[in-house]
Amino acid sequence: MAASVREKQAAALKRMLNFNVPPVKNSASEPVWKVLIYDRFGQDIISPLLAVKELRDMGITLHLLLHSDRDPIPDVPAIYFVMPTEENIDRICQDLRNQLYESYYLNFISAISRSKLEDIASAALGANAVNQVTKVFDQYLNFITLEDDMFVLCNQNKELVSYHAINRSDIMDTDMEIIMDTIVDSLFCFFVTLGAVPIIRCPRGNAAEMVAVKLDKKLRENLRDARNSLFTGDTIGAGQFSFQRPLLVLVDRNLDLATPLHHTWTYQALVHDVLDFHLNRVDMEVSTGHENSPAGARPKKKNKKSYDLTAADKFWQKHKGSPFPEVAESVQQELDTYRAQEDEVKHLKSIMGLEGEDEGAISMLSDNTAKLTSAVSSLPELLEKKRLIDLHTNVATAVLEHIKTRKLDVYFECEEKLMSKSTLDKSLLDMISDPDAGTPEDKMRLFLIYYISSLQPPSEFDLEQYKKALTDAGCNLSPLNYIKQWKAFAKMAAGPTNYGNSGTKTMGLFSRVMNSGSQFVMEGVKNLVLKQQNLPVTRTLDSLMDMKSNPETDDYRYFDPKMLRGSESSVPRNKNPFQEAIVFVVGGGNYIEYQNLVDYTKAKPGKHVLYGCSELFNASQFLKQLSQLGQK
Image (cartoon, rainbow, N blue to C red; front, side, top):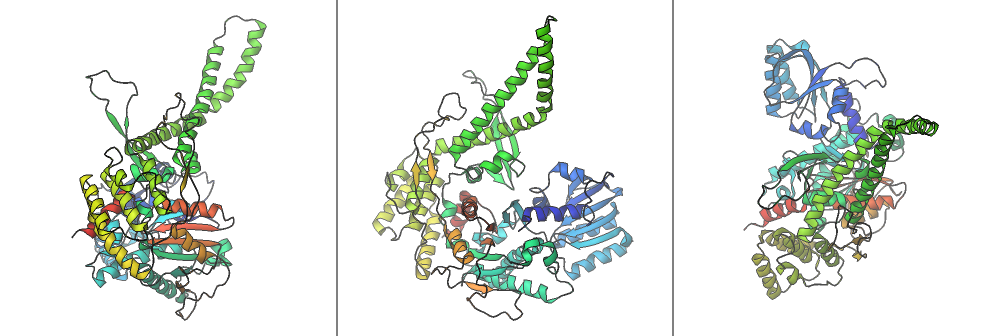
């Protein structure tokens, strides 16, 4: 994947904002000023990829939601970027009748049907605006790219394709068809943007298989129509892809229910777990002022802040996959180097107020002028550094508060031991009954991981004891009802998932971060070091990419949409190991799994893996879905 999917999607958006003509580099001419009209889906796709400044550089003076009250701007072209839904089409027709803009460039996030196109055409005729509808495009951009190697299908209406929606016991076949079509439409858009036709592998008998069958059919139909195929250019544009096609591994969330509930220890996954983090933006409250207020004074008011954690943030890129203690130490180091630079600038300023005109002072002055010039020229860089340090200090401090008050380090260590079948330092019942450790939700997550990963379910007597302790701790037992049913069903299908013999080592206390000069006082927090192990999704990918024989994956189905006659088989035609793969989890994914794949790829030079999921949830959102499924 010579260019990452993020770059390809951003390039497609920039082309669209330039009236579907590739933007010319280094042109000195002014951009054409225009308005961007999007719906919530369009907004979610654009916001992680293009900052407001980039939109302005491309001539976008206003960006407005389609269903907001908009005033006419008669002498400006409008670029629409919306889903082809009934209500969106109605609104576009209304805009045409109201003559809001000079010209209309209609871009649909995924393909528009013939009948809806006819609706627009008749509205344009009725409003005498046929000449103003300049272009209508299907953009095939119906997915959201969050990282170079990670994408999700949707943020709006994600409950329509959620784990809960797919696994409801009362789901009708027609509802399931709609869910599968929605997922397949987005995956099809993803491969059109990537410019590649994958070879598809999936397990039998679950939602992942339904997606595979439909996606294979959709790709096959598109390839058969030689004149209109969206993949005809893939030998030219895709560089190295002409020799090797990527592997798409479709798996079902039920393959591994423990990982999404697991407490985590890496920076990005922790931010997602304990703060309000979605579409690469974290919203949090930051208290103003650090000094202690006198007794009886009003508490300091908290400001709401939003921070973008994007690819442009070097610190985030470097540390998002690091264990949290390392992150705290790195923030502190950055702060120390920044302060040293700042002191140097202050020192130079004080020297510049020299008295006396003696020779030494003059030579010092000329010497320092050069230094000051370089200090001034590095000022913007220094300010940007300061902004990032403040951002990560605030985010890391907020995460640290959660770790300390909820004893997340203890939970993380305990769950790692459960998943790797090691012995616990402290009995599970003690953890659940400890009023100082964690929220009811934390306790429920811990118990569910024990229940999912134990080879033998606890005896009825033990289970009653656990249930009593959980109820006393304020837990809702609905998720357990669902997991019991799931486990009974999964047992008929196969044994419990193996999580490898991972575990963690506890290091000594933090060296630097412990000293009192640090902003992060880590006392009482364990410094856990992760041992590298592969989670079930990564192991599945590994055996399919390298064509290893493995009882877990030997029976996976094999689809090649480029084969004229789709022959049903699980025997791969392609015998060579794959260099590039996309893992897609039907039913939702998380940053723990993503990070595990990133670490796996680092250890395999030359291999490139993308992670995708129908929705991205943290443990509490997943627990809520399990709870809905388990309500009696």
